[in-house]
Amino acid sequence: MRNVISGFSAFYCFLVFISCSTPESEKAVYAGNPVLEGWYADPEVIVYEDKYWIYPTYSDDFDRQVFMDAFSSPDLVNWTKHERIIDTAAVKWARRAMWAPGVISKGDQYYLFFAANDVHEGEVGGVGVGVANQPEGPFRDLLGKPLINDIVNEAQPIDQYIFKDTDGIYYMYYGGWGRCNVVRLKDDFTGLLPFEDGELYKEVTPEGYVEGPFMFVRNGKYYFMWSEGGWTGPDYRVAYAISDSPFGPFEKKGVILEQDEKIGRGAGHHSVLKIPGEEEYYIVYHRRPLDETDPNHRVTCIDKMEFGPNGEILPVILTFEGVEKKPIKP
Image 1: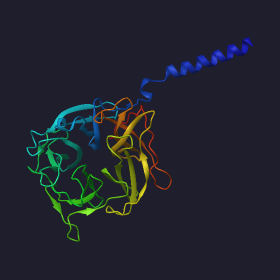
Image 2 (image 1 turned 120 degrees about the horizontal axis):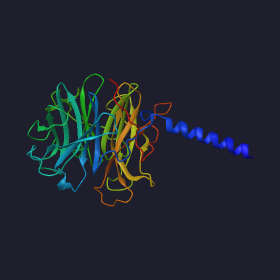
Image 3 (image 1 turned 90 degrees about the vertical axis):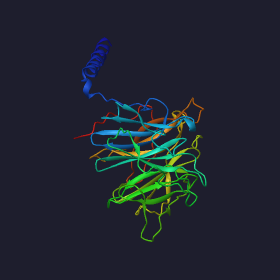
Image 4 (image 1 turned 180 degrees about the vertical axis):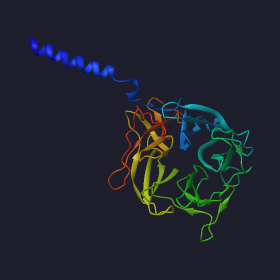
């Protein structure tokens, strides 16, 4: 028995030695969730050159959401905060909240689309556009007025996502109040272009749609995603459809992101990150901590998004660990 115990002790010490001898550089480092410090929601993720960028809504009372911050990272773990990249002082027609940024770059310019004011018939507000010479701004108002002010097809002009198709055409998906439109953008983002049938707006609302549209292409298929439920409640979640066309039809395939009673509630209004040069995808979204009851107390998180054998999106597992450190390869 003594020899057995001695042998076990020696083996245990060997394992401890191996563990302690692992170089620090080889140990997995995780970002942790929430990935950003503070109350932030509606995160839009994008890669600009050698950095990841997240542009979120400053999550506060509606009339206090009068500015936006941005965050950059070389590796998804270490984030730098860029304060007040745009505010209502720079956008004279935006007298109230600014939220749900959508971003894209073209040439040497960076564009930030946003929703502002609580728009109803006859009011000024809706979707605006900012432009800057660098990703961290400051962004200035490109048009001096909303890009879309009108309520078309009963779609509230909010929650815009800018999508560059494989043929180089720029589209914008947007809409609240349970309706979603797609429009074609001019190359300089100063206005809309008509579709082949002469119309400026196409409704593409799928079953269950509430707000927060997002689009990406994978293996020649168009993945359209959106948020369902009430943004203040635990039923907020993300669903998706797959189509052969950017105009649909978008038939709902299922829900892939929703609350976990052990992690957080109200998981939704997301964007998707594809790691450059790799077939690896992450979902960037907001959720409400379990101990929070204030609807504005939302945090930004990142978790892995994976696909099944037939291209279907698998249900996302919410975590506190987040994702591993991931520098962008040169």
